[in-house]
Image (cartoon, rainbow, N blue to C red; front, top):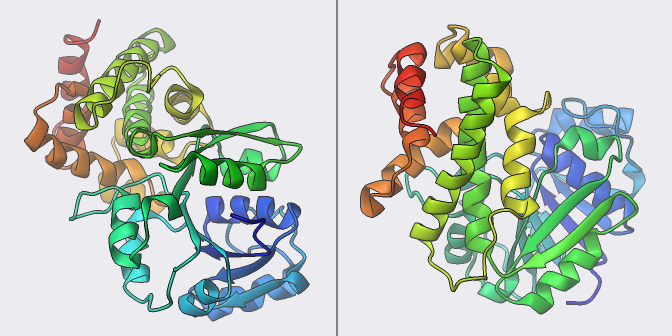
Length: 334
């Protein structure tokens, strides 16, 4: 892959905005697909996203804004999907532009609802692209910290390591360090699971459990993540290390950070909010809510021991008492 001169950003949330900041700073012209024309108009007037990360200023003269997803895709060599996973299908269904010869990157830390398949598998099917064209960008990376240009480490996952290296080189700058991996499956599953575990630590916080217990929850979550990922996608010994930052690092920052919307969502549930009321008050998508149901349903096939996910499913979907579920969970942890 040669250096992409034109990059399509598909989505306009906080992480899409943070990724767009990196892309523009690294010298590429952007086509930015934003669904609402009024948001585009506000963006052009103020030079920043009117809804997310408003502190980040953009050179709007070098951005081609569009409400047409196909216009963005057909004009670019690199296409970045950055909308929340619950909305992915409705946008992809509009795509008629060919992705032949393009690199497609998912920065979505979620899973395709109802289909219960990984984002990469879904995009390969719908866009008719190969493993070498499909990559994911992940790691411990809150959008707010990217906006502040705080040191961030990202991993590019792709079956083709040559492509992964090219993508990693493109995203690297003075505050973004990048590395590569062939484990595109494990990286995506970790991105789904860590959000679920962050809801769990949030619920514990809302219930007034202390740091001691939350540390035990996270330690067990790391082992649970390893069990599930290796059960879902077995690899040769030494090919996957859950201790690496793209797995455990992302879990830690999501479980503890004040920027974590999943932890915030869980805290509200622990304090007595209903799921619906917590979602309405947040006004942002907590991916872990949707991921919980998907992982629970996927695990019907595999039967892997995932007690933390099971407890979150009981609380979020079966309306079981958070107090009771966490007490039952505490008896299982070690």
